[in-house]
Amino acid sequence: MLRKVLHSKIHMATVTAALPDYVGSITIDADILDAVGMRVNDAVLVADCRNGNRFETYIFEGERGSGRIEINGAAAHLVEPGDMVIIMHMALMSDEEYASNRPRVALMNADNSVAEVIRYEPGPN
Image (cartoon, rainbow, N blue to C red; front, side, top):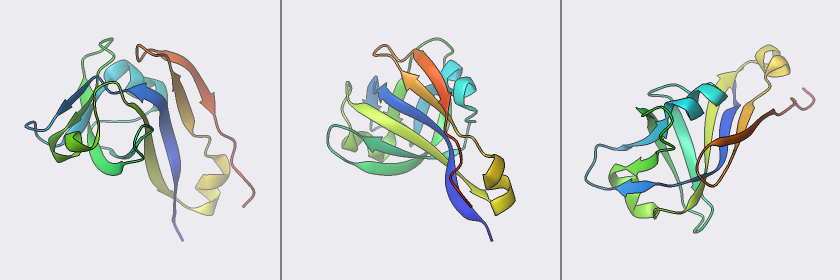
């Protein structure tokens, strides 16, 4: 059996733009993607810490070093620039894969630079 579990997370990033007229997705600075192992077109769950809105979308790569966290398309109506968001990427894993999974979590600075990358340890099977 496969279970849906956390693969990686970007914790407390600041939304830099909300662009409702843009094709739907979330644009994330390539440096941030590299820090946690997320990829273009990966599905992510985004939680807005200001209003509690949650939505699922997919990743576009943003300019490296830009600090861009842009919410595009219909989901842009759920956030405002300056909102803090948590971006979670899930993966389907077997119990064996889960046992060695240590999700990478980027703790963000206010300017969307990565303050620190930590790892979560797996719980008991």
